[in-house]
Length: 419
Image 1 (cartoon, one colour):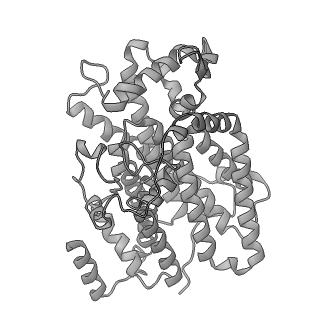
Image 2 (cartoon, helix red, strand yellow):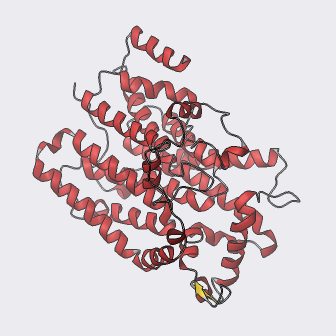
Image 3 (cartoon, helix red, strand yellow):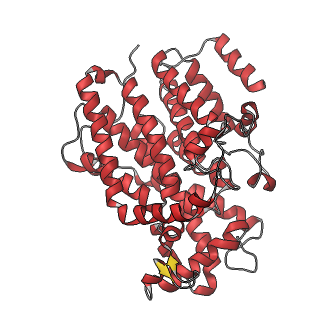
């Protein structure tokens, strides 16, 4: 059975009508849920308590104060400082912590309310994660009920990664941009030709450039993921049996990545050179075929409540995306209406991502050759989002009554969850 694809490629994105209230809800629901939690716990941004915990209170707050003090008065101080020994570059620090456009919100608050400004930035970023997630699920899938796309978007915005790493706010930009980048890849793969004009030709380049600029570290992670996603999509999609068209799309993708890197070379190149003289040079990692975490222990992260403070330093990656949605993920792989080749390729990527969270050589691959100090599995949000894509694939056909499971397969799902 050939499954019909519902992505709309017949007209530019900007000319298509949108129903704005769900977009607004996709921003407000996760943002307000996050904000209300802190108010409930008495950690109010403009009162006596503060959200400044661990690295946010020990490092980032000082960088933001430095950023606010110098951006419009002494911008050169953001690139080079004489406070560092006899003088040294700050480009790497600036590129890692401060290049997010949302950081400009700090200028809307007095310096005395800087913790409150950071709280607002984090809340806005979590809202934007929901917004871009909803945009992806709405445009990519033909749901009869808008609330399905909204539920998936909120699940992504409040996934285990976001909740446990919200104070590492410089990483959240890549979580925002991931759905847009995956959508651009889907447009490229499913288009019958190579995009030659309009937004379809440039949207991939634009999102790639924003990804590199916002945070090169997590940006590298989502570009690695989308490259793997792009390759398996090339293998899955039926109209690409023409090898010539497949190679053209691959070349187009490589060229877009190259030019996005060149557009950001003013930041990426000096940052790379600074890393060679700093952390990358001083840290030695011994390559070995070792499991830092036993793979079966990762199953605990599929359910809520499997995190405590000590896991920041010595724990497992967080990729929780909703225990109920896990049922639909298992149903996708057992649903025979989806081509077996597609399911095997997607299962292979899922397994690869899971192994990347516990197998040392793959951990080094995702973390730029360095074992992470605290906060393990810093790329784990890509697994959450990919799992939600597969959940959405199943829900799209389940709501139409096409994707049915036999009683035996339902029993298999129940036994897996019980185990």
